[in-house]
Image (cartoon, rainbow, N blue to C red; front, side):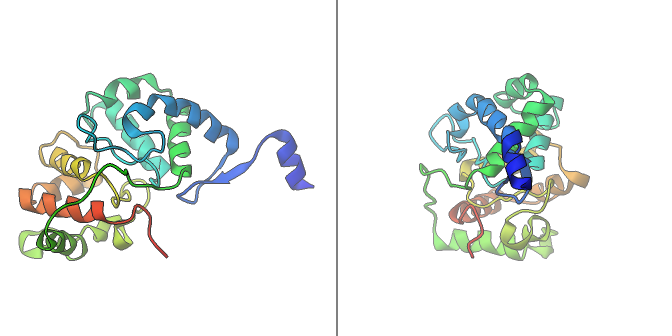
Length: 216
């Protein structure tokens, strides 16, 4: 009876990829807003590495509150991106909420237009930094903050697997160059400043080579 009443009222709870439950109405509104995002992030939300669009990340499989925080950061200037700023300014708080939950509800898929072509040594170096860090240089393991296999924890530490490698490198360099400053306690900016170009290349390549969602 309760289910019937819910359906009759048009309020249907849907679980997103992150486990959060939102009403179908939220996802429907979010899908409408996503029309603004498709040109750069693709209809699937997978992102892209096509020349000119190589810094567009995967949005699917991300924590919705993390995505809301990023849009707010583009708006308030703690994350600088000339392409995203106008869209962030355009969206209302409700639209930010709805579109973030919409993308979180979609299957986490990698962009199909990039390949990770690097040596085994580069991948091994990236894996070492992700799982063990380099304490001689005060670099903690990525998994220390980003959780088991770096598949994300909450609003501050996103799933960083299956991302476009060009985007990952740019993101780390933005922390390093203080173009981005929306991290809690300056954790990422401090780590990024200790990473060499070789480190960044290796970490981005390894993460990009992994599935966008944790395999069972």
